[in-house]
Length: 374
Image (tube, rainbow, N blue to C red; front, top):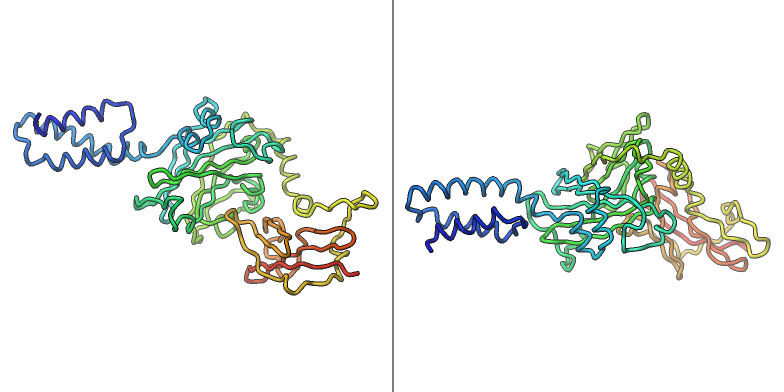
């Protein structure tokens, strides 16, 4: 069999197959075209190969690019979640496959699905809010170079955040962190695939829901802008981070205004969420003003240290076995500095301490531990 006949056979197999071609096959076909260009002699064969070459080159620039990506179902399967894979393959799932590029990265929102008991991976948040939303986003480099594998030392040097945002709600107050969210991710063929989950967003379908994807670890007004009058959320054009904003095509029939209002009321009460007062062991009542009780408290000098941040953007502090992790957007009002805020209370009536955070004008947050004065 001559080389041009081998080439036609390869092309015929590639174009007739219903399977997705691999990158290796794509590369092999293009190399064969270049390799055989000078040795094809019959005119009839040259025309046939030329026509097929046009098809392959067109496909290489468009269809092959889409074929590179796994489907949401395949991503869930890759992460070992068969139940979620079935959910993404159901009629209730929304297939989107929309890409946007910002900075050095291209983000593709592949699909979303919502409902109860959609995942094999259970957590405590599902017990509190069983209605969950799952979304799949892929992240690639604009120049086509592969993202680092999880085993690479460079993995994690660039962090990413993917979060739902609700029109009419401040992004730094209502986001994946406050909506009991989390994520799983895998890297396949140099592409990051991230599945996020959070409390169901369908109840907000009549208001307008966005999905933010970008670099960084948290949501703030440096990344996105919030219009107080209209409730619209847009990308901050002065942001130094890569970031895109997708409008989610939700079914407005699934909106539940009453449920949404109740949910937001619970979510936006930072005092209850951050500083739940422990029960008194003596009279079964709650303390209501820890600031007054610790107004004359004794600061432990060696406990004073700058907080650190985890991969989700939560501020972390640890001293003498006591650990605390919290969302600073709940703790400090916009522009509030120079005030020590109580984050949590530790100990019992005999020896009680509080952990306090303070933000300075430069945005640096410091934590300290204070003992109750005797």
